[in-house]
Image 1 (cartoon, rainbow, N blue to C red):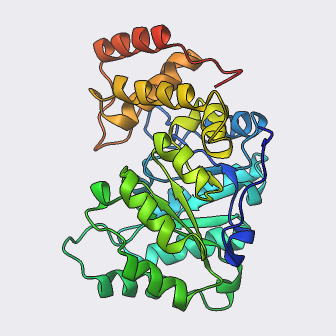
Image 2: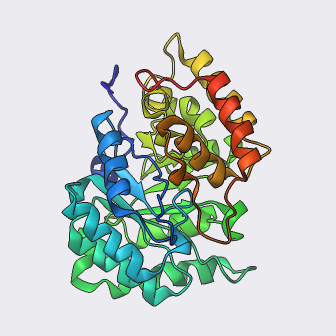
Length: 318
């Protein structure tokens, strides 16, 4: 994925922010619904070989909160043991219990990963801005001597968490931890919201979007890359959208992404993304999900398989 243009500066803090596409990893499972560590490592190696600077483990796409503290901690250790460089790993450390978020964040930092992605509190709803700020402070203040080594990315996905990150929360946290908070991952899937974040914060931290059709717009505004679910199987195309927003092929490639997303509208998203991996790899084990998600039925998979084959995903260019 050779970049065809220099990426714009986005403020001093962004000098250490991640660049390029760090796929939001799907998590392969064993028949017992544990993590398939060998397959996960192989998937990471394939993505890195395709040009991705790194990978992101245990976010929304990776069913992160469905895995325990011990499972996630062990998985990161085993990824590193299987040959993935720590600096090429981003970890979503979000848990319902703040002590577990702290433990995962400290473990990730001590393992040497690039950075951590952290959701606001996501169990209780109707949380005030102060409550959100206090949750982040609970973790960051307890990091102690490990804090200077933490690169933190705030994660906004209110349609999943029921709790968002307001401009007040983001601004307050950035002012309190200027050297720690380097970016925001905005997965609200609202172009207007993402533009608003860019206009408010791009000079102080990097705004990344998870909704791939918005990547060209954000690339023009200084976004450096993305954590993308579609990048599990089309990382090159996703990379071009954000790093080459005004290339002649960008409008058609953006439309291609929009069409793929529409094809998936009738499915639960994570099972469908795993279904695409099963189609492309010929490995039905990719269909496994952990409850409360429900795997595609045989009929659903058969229909999706034909849909994806007709759509055509090309590993050498996508």
